[in-house]
Figure 1 (cartoon, rainbow, N blue to C red):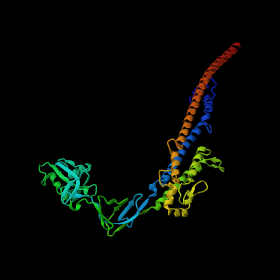
Figure 2 (figure 1 turned 120 degrees about the vertical axis):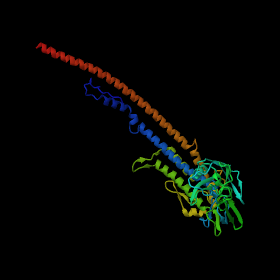
Figure 3 (figure 1 turned 30 degrees about the horizontal axis):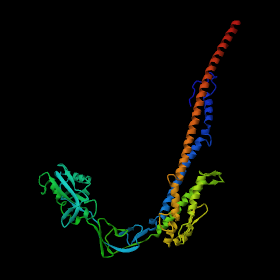
Figure 4 (figure 1 turned 45 degrees about the vertical axis):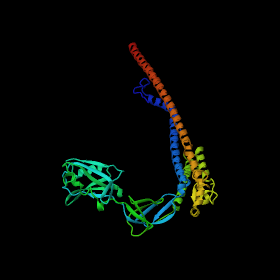
Length: 479
């Protein structure tokens, strides 16, 4: 608010005009600043937007939990167990047939490692061009693969082994280079980035500054050890035998779908057969059900807290009295108590030990649930429905998923509520601006009036002083 630095002189110098104007302006702004005023209402609305956003997140978590129970994948969960996972570990995808088989690992997958002859440390090797190819060695013969094109490395006259190693590492050739230092000097050591017999490599000398790519001088010196069969350093596939008679191999230590749906990984070579057992994963089913209960209870408890009224403190929750929040809670409670079309032993959640307690939460009767888990087909029918197809909405989980999807849709409950509250904020902001404009006008008017009054009072005070002076002079003359 603007202020006066000298006003009040005409009013006698004892009038705090700034305070008078401020009090008047503050009175105009009361709709904004008073308790429960526009500022408070804006903060409350913003808090409600945030709160509904948090509830939306909880409902989204519930939807995800319901989705696991309404999908075929969730009910086809299996586990793969190894008799010694430190030697051979295993996993299986949902729907894999229950089975048991043995694995013996004869060889682990290897990357090719080749080392060039020793050269004096730190000295230039010689200018020219190297060619790196990825492929397979077989009986001393190399066949370049088609997956990775050959890479040419240009070597300068002053390049040392370290410089060449750096260029190879930057070339994306599928090979990594490092320097090995021993008693004879330095050696260029190359290793293929991938394992498997198809990941071998060969280094050729395309060009040597001395004009001879086949001698043992200049850049050609690197050919020794890098352009021939690597022998024991050759790349190799992992090799294993299933059930003692079926040989399988893999470029990595993981064997995918050698047994349908199963991936087993060789960690070490075996000294005895390792058994892999695939069976239905009852623990995964149980966890999905428990996660579903936890997700629902989180939503229900949040809505309980937000809509409650505490008689003792006489305080209500953020959404106390909000009919839409209460309606949301009732919608979720009703769908959780719905019936499945299942003709099996379970038709409601309470049939498997998921009962409602005070406050609307679900409590798990562990004994009853464990008994129900022994009938996976019945459980599946409860959550997915009699047809056992996840594309319908006749199972309890399907109904929960459908209800939460409606709530979370772009034109559903949460989107509509968010839009309504943001419209309230916009209207609030417009009203705040209107009040502030009116306060600014009132301030300008008061300043103008007080200025005019001060000017007039200054003139009157001056006239009064003049008259007093004249009266005093007149009295002196008369005497």
